[in-house]
Image 1: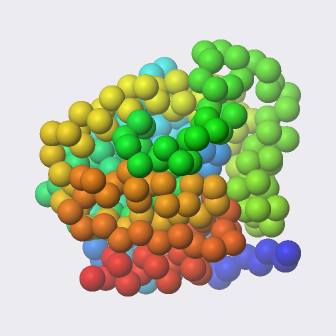
Image 2: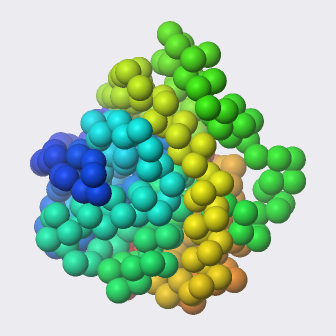
Length: 285
């Protein structure tokens, strides 16, 4: 498959102080704010294919999450509650009282918790390819156990030590598998490899997995305490499918579920046009 680079969209990279860290934030366009939250093994560049079209109507705010990319390699704070506070602080610093949020993978629990705890600030919510802790609905997906790397990443100090010197091959496996073998653009591939071969980058990334029990507790508590009133679009692909939609259904007031066929886990890079076809009408409603 030939990957072509789309026409360049003017993007400003800004350092934003929030919640005790300094976040690297990509900014583009003007209009209502739309925050884009990536996962592992990504940086803000995960959204490279859709920032341009989104920025024609919106102010796009795409941070490197805590510990990722050029954002502070914090010693802790990788639970969804702390990360949601990071994002709220970015919105405050940028003068945006409200925003819509689009999130994937590790960014999804953050986005859901942000919408549950700050319903007045989040207009619309788009979440993709992730699970929300142990909330009911994902039993069929987890029937054979969670993906193998969850356990590997969760053991403190193990994965980053074992992978020392082999970071590039490891990250490349996720990029290839996450696009069902199709791969990603060369510039995004290289930027991803560079981001995760920097000192302490893997420790931060794996801290998300080590904080999953805390995140699960936060999600469970919030979902029991209140309903998700933000209009929500749950998008699945391979391998998560409709599991995220099933988890959201019991406590979400307005929920639409979609599964993109023949699409890998990294939806914004594997099927960017199909993603835009779903989110642009939803954000505009």
